[in-house]
Image (tube, each protein chain N blue to C red):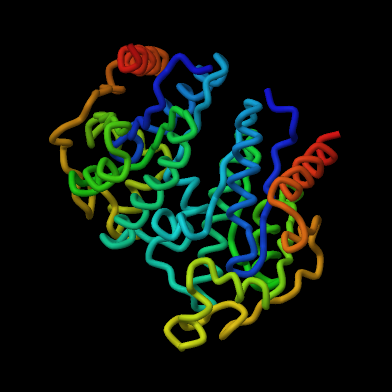
Length: 176
Length: 176
């Protein structure tokens, strides 16, 4: 049985901040210890339960809602769920928190805009600046600095391993 | 670890056929043996991941799609998933099968219309006949007899315990 309390680590941050990299790495570590863990990755879910949704305000809201409802089923089954989605506004984060209650922990992956833009892992910032992607967070759509995150990872200044270890320790602390 | 192969038992049948009763009873039995198991109940999901969807053909299709995608996440995590949804047409069943592949097993809960109507556990048949519920399966919407179910439960002629035991044996057989 898991030594961790069922929890939803909801990672918010800009595109390219490192959310999914950290999420999958933490998942691997937890699963290797026999802990029930699942990453719900925004990009992946858009081909699954969230297919058909775009990036308008309404669609983002529905995207977050369905993701939170899916996370709820998993956390009710004793999973540690790691949600990796930009979740750009405090309203969206609050709507997920409302669905998940005290299981919800907001993790801010706070890599700054300039760094994310410079990395541009998926080439999306370039496209967005060329006007090829509407509603792109940080370029043509808002990203609120979280007003109440439960934990912050500054992935800019530390290795993936250090970030993962910090989140692991955070989870352990929650479970005391 | 589960002795059962991760499987999606997709229960199709009329409203009042006994799908959810059997589903929850089987879930209880499996969970008591430490097996990861989750019921995805159509009525419950309509307040969760499927909120906002009605009973038109388009909405039913989307309802089945989201449910199948949710089941997929669970079955990929070694769950036995029991989906309890009317799923009235062969097209809808096939669309779920397409998403879930060979993990998908169609279970027909074949309680006849006249019996379901007579029971009318939720008072829905009466309402439907009074025209208060549009698109009600069996009354104002079609129910196809499944053309390729993997297992059939005739809940009309047997107790809940017997039905559950049969499905348990079916699962065990699948896992050999």
